[in-house]
Length: 301
Image (tube, rainbow, N blue to C red; front, side, top):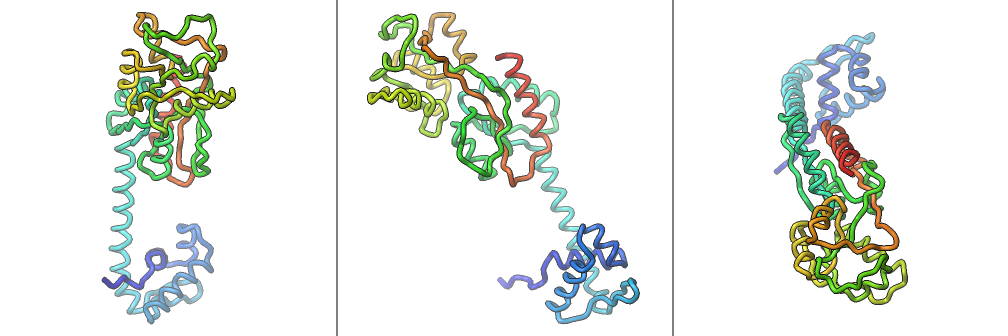
């Protein structure tokens, strides 16, 4: 297939100059300088090998070749504008969100409110480990990410704080053989099995970093790796090991005696962030969703 030689930018400049009948007016609409507009026109004329415009005393007239080209330029410009409008409508009518497993049930409350307030916007929610959510934002697979607040070491990501101090609870089954103590050191848990999320999970990195920070050489044995919140809770309840979860997700099970919280000397606190691509266009509804998520955390946490 032979690609067209005509540059679309130059054709757009030609169309606006011809439509306005003025280089000055076209330059204003294009936010370009007059010399830049003239450059694009001359470049287009060199490409096609024909003179397209006559400029005399700031007045622009079309040559016969320019008159013939104008109808094609107008049609192409209108098609480009229609394509841009289509994509804008598509973005406005569908908001794709990536959410960390750790906080997905809490974010679901904001999603329900969003759907009530903005029924014309289709909400598409994908639950994944936090580091996978970060990658999805970078690759534009989602418009917005809601994750556990960590340094994801991605310079093209912009983090917007949603909540600063969310407590994570380390829990085991009610029949766990871990000795009863008023407070536990991480050393007391060495060698005890851990039900963990995938390596791309923020909570997995957080709990393992706690052991590393205390210089413990025997980290917990990962007895099961799960990629769903429900699956992890089920395994912990059945006694397969300990697990790290957002406190709001397990406090009822703790109160009912299905789970037992391990009383650590130091609470594990994390923030919650919204992630956006620095260079990508921000979805018109992203800010509204972020505000609703912030309200949910303020009200429920």
